[in-house]
Length: 95
Image (cartoon, rainbow, N blue to C red; front, side):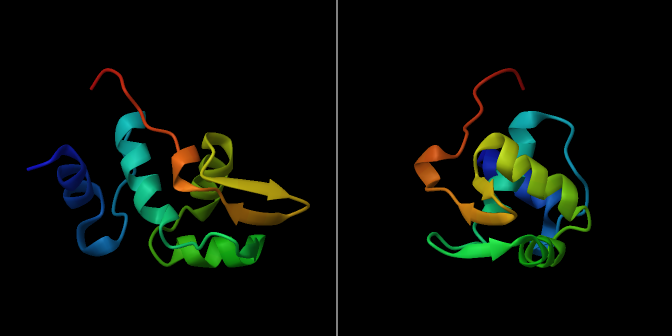
């Protein structure tokens, strides 16, 4: 089984985040999956971002902050936009 699939099966069974992984490499797999709930070119208010994330994970504040801090999304004047996938981080490092 591919590493990504194993991480998703462990932490996101049925598409819902059941536990947040401790390792950044696994967090990035989860964030990548959650970011796919948003569309390029669409501006989202913070409440919309929260609601979309909350459909799959209860700690939407953590995910929203990580989206911005790690470059999945940008925030300007309280409006969020998904960045192109090539801007998203990939983690290469220790397991």
